[in-house]
Image (cartoon, rainbow, N blue to C red; front, side, top):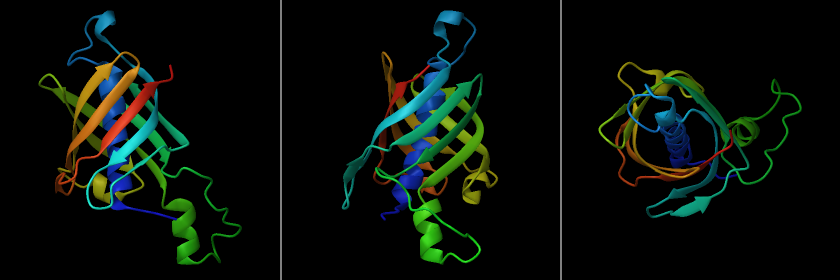
Length: 169
C-alpha cells in the first residue's frame, strides 16, 4: 500500500475543488451563478521527485452554500478488510484506514479563482487546528473542475497537486 502525505493534501485539494465548483463565482446571489452539488474526483496529479497520477475509485464531495462535506478513498484498488480492529496490527490498520479521508467544514472564495477551505471536523486533527486552511486556485470547464493546491495547513505547497473533478449532480 502506498500512503503519502501528498494523498492527504490531494484530499484537501479535492475538497477545495468541490467547494469551488459548488459556487463557481464569489457570490451565489443569482441562481445562474450558483454551482452547488455533488462532485467526484477523476484524477489527482502529484508532481515532484515521486511524481504520479492516480484515479481514486471512491470519492464524493457535497457543496451547499458555504459548507462542504467530503469522503474519499485514495487508492485505485480495494482496501484490505480488517476482521477485528481490536487485534489488528498497526500496519493492517494503516493499510485499511490510511487511504480514507473524511472532512467537513466551510469555504470561501476570494479573487477570481481562489478557494480557501477550513475543516470543522476531519479524520486528520491537524486540519482542524486554529488558523489551519487549505488554499487552491480553480478553473471550471463545463462539468469539470480543476484545482491546484497553493497552500496546505503546514504552509506553501512546494509541489502543488492538481485535482480534476467531475460534477455528478
